[in-house]
Image (cartoon, rainbow, N blue to C red; front, side, top):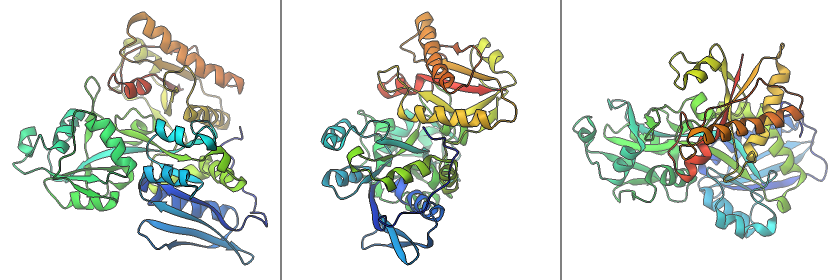
Length: 430
């Protein structure tokens, strides 16, 4: 795998002109991030006069640039994650943007284009925190997921029921075609709750946020980049501590409402330009643009251990004086294999270690889920850390003896999705 630190770009070839490819899907990805990534990519390829031009329909645009009188462009339609997969199926686009994992039915429908779950097809390009937002005058600071669900379902109708002001709750929600809505429905409402019919629905994250900022009784949910003048609440699930959607908690996906932002590129629809663009997005230059746009990049950063961090005594001693890196390694659902993001994060960690003037000590710490308690859970969590260590050793990176703490410190509830989050490997350096 090429190093992700490399960002050098060769100019487009003579046959790579006009429409290079088309993109459809998530408004979260498409509203700003995709246009910024494409603009930066074109600049890195030597194009000039780079413009973002509106197309005939709202939330559709063209990013174009030129060199030597030759125009090259990419068309983008940002109407929600599901529309991206539908456009792939119709053959209308080559790349889908999504703020959720591809669904099983979509994988099956697109199977004639190749394995949509494969390493070359599924690209995690950024991490987002799904922020639950209120008006800045609201005194509440934290809510559990259950209370959030009751607010959005209409079961809780006045803020005083939660110890807040005597104000009616006004609900603002994304439209039902958006991945933001799919994520909220899955992570918050589940099968137990339905969105209140009184909720106002919006295609735009930013518009929703601005209306909540102007409504003292308002509550909404948006991508992290769209908090704007509203205020994000701390959120937790039962058995976990409340966390704000901040850089470290979101980058490591410890924050309960964190989510991955994806590009899906069907193997049999790819061309050299698409592969080159995807690689650019994964480089440091691409991830810098992710950060500038307001999302959380996957570039690694070290954060000194909190003095008030929680965990078993052995864990606290092990991490004393160390810094935590902004990555957790996770595994494919129901598998001992690292998932696609983790495989790329291995290369990011290798790049990080090789860039240090003096090689730091690297400590891998495995965790499991509450369904794997006791000694078995500790053994399994240690095996996960060993799996990461094995991949690093292939690249010549050594670590301290790994540790495993089983079901301690879950970051998500003991659901199917929660198991994937809880089965993780932390990375510490000193």
